[in-house]
Length: 294
Image (cartoon, rainbow, N blue to C red; front, side, top):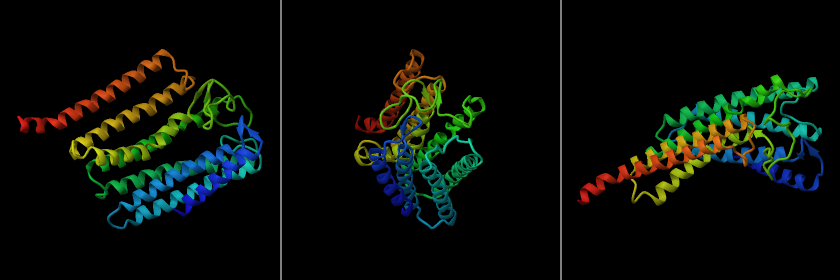
């Protein structure tokens, strides 16, 4: 939580920087990247603290893993802010030996963080941290967050074919990084953007547990715990499909708000499949009650 409060403070400073500092880097305000990463770490840190609070007995593995995640977050944010203060980019930047070293450290930190995230998920699921629906929400949320990290891999692989000297990666597909983007988030509005699937996947950690809480609070009278658990599985499958769909759309060079007919067709099939599966789960969950009433 100390790290989370620090990131909240950095988010405020960065928001002020976006307003008062007119410098532009890769087509967006220079303070925008620290702002987005700080907000993301606030959400991630609060979620991890909440998950750790659910443990019914102390786990040194969980404690050390959480501490490692915080340390890696500090390293990543120090590099992002440090490079911003130097007036240059942090991601994909290999234009000088120092920049290349910092980018290599970021890449290593991200890989270790992904492994630590997986270890923490295993520790959490080995303890009875919640009811069945809650366990599915936590497990699927952390698993999909890991998927969100994995789908970011093409950003680094893009460096193998990059035509820009000193750049070893890209988040845009079909257009150069730094072009026109959506307000606030900066996602490309003229080409594909791999950050979208990455973003959606990471925040499954918040979306699915919140869904489980809402189902427990407002649906407990009508849906038993087994039905709620099955609904969480359906939601997790649909959410995972959405992450893959957004990544696939980006890899094909399509802007988020300008999908082609194939993308729209797949999205419609995913929506219909998810809604149908959820409806079947609800109907099946009510059958015993209907039979009893009859």
